[in-house]
Length: 227
Image (spheres, rainbow, N blue to C red):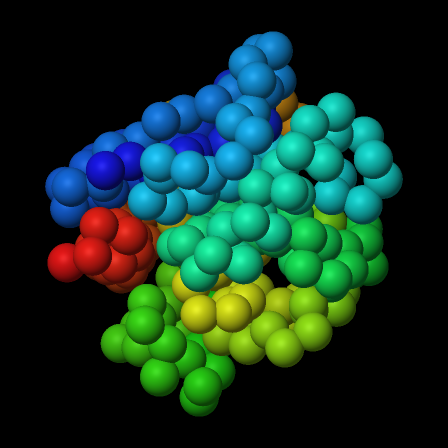
């Protein structure tokens, strides 16, 4: 069984998902439309959909393959296929289902940080046993300003409230990163011209991020393969 993984840039690939998901029997089929690879026209034959991050915007039409990605996200939600959006992927999930995304009014969130678990997350199939303030890696300049109708807010933040949400029964959006390695973050720092101190502060937190969120992603894989 396999997950379709959509990437938007070389520097934001599956990362730790390449070990977490296959460990539970869910293989990864990565498609890179930024390289000219065609998106599948449907999700037939896939057990899950994962849409990764990227530097593009989810609201201005600048993503050439946006319509195809939005269509796949809508299909995943409609079919209750396990679906996950990370960073830009979460923003695209919100837009696909009727939410709104805009430039972050309080500036970017970059580096290691904490998010706050909402009470309702205690009943969520993936997030139920997370600590009250789990560690994450933030790297976003835009933000979800309005959740899709009927979406469930699972994680909040002091600056941007919509940090994680669920649409329907089996589609999750996470504004933050949990899959990033030190090498990936070093590339983001270089590409964005960010103070290297952000990398120095973030790398020591990565083991804690992986310890907390690895089980959540393995749980996502188990949900996809039906175990």
